Image 1: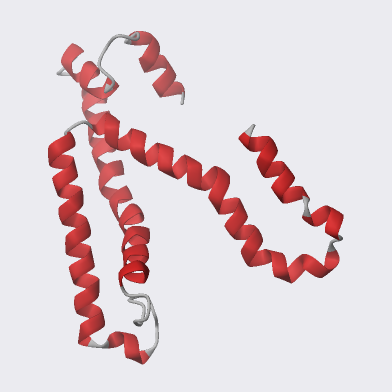
Image 2: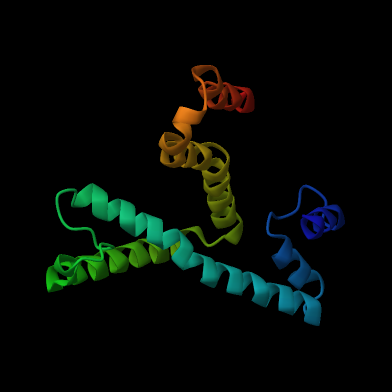
Length: 159
């Protein structure tokens, strides 16, 4: 946050959205900027599997709802059909991601989309899913009045 704020102050609005490219253009021989560029590349490379796992899981459940999940640990899930489905979904996801990366070409758009999606998931969807998962275990301990606190809190956040 501090690096982003200071970079924003150095390159005021009206400039290109990718601050790292502006720094490379301003000081191409700076070792610190080259290290920052390398670090951003590592972040993108290491975060790719974190985004592809839920996509693959969701597509598997959406396209094959009555089949054995590719993430099931039973012996039935170790058949060649399930493995082929896993690899085909992976190749499709990587191919679409490569196509989008080739067409978009701006890292700013990619970070904006992933940040917006991740932020919405963390703020609004993840707490509700935790409540649904843990809620039945503790429902007897709370009264009906206290069980209504979560929807009220969500409406306050949305305002």
